[in-house]
Length: 138
Image 1 (cartoon, rainbow, N blue to C red):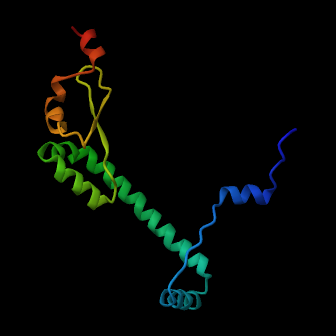
Image 2 (cartoon, rainbow, N blue to C red):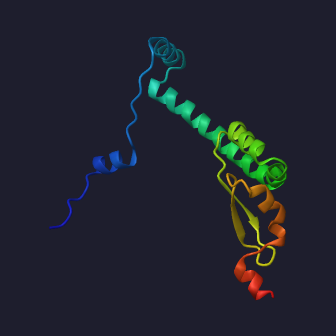
């Protein structure tokens, strides 16, 4: 037997997950006042706030990328533990892995910041290479 084809509504519901949350009376009153003042529905007020926060998130993500390019390895080499907390609290992300280029092939070598030896690994990285690259350049 063939699968039953989804209706338009079923497809829409599949693409638009439902979110339910509760507000305390004070926040609900504030939201109702904003609805009256601005002349838009509560749902639209909430979606507007969400969209603004998504824009902020996008900007922060770009700042993180720029920061990584300029400062990340220097900060990590100096103090891995401090680096971890700095990234975690400044950018509200959990740094787990980072990469550095192989001396020979330029491909990434992935390093885990939680590795106790990561500081030494990073210092020595440009002396060490992928095994295959080392053999190819012997």
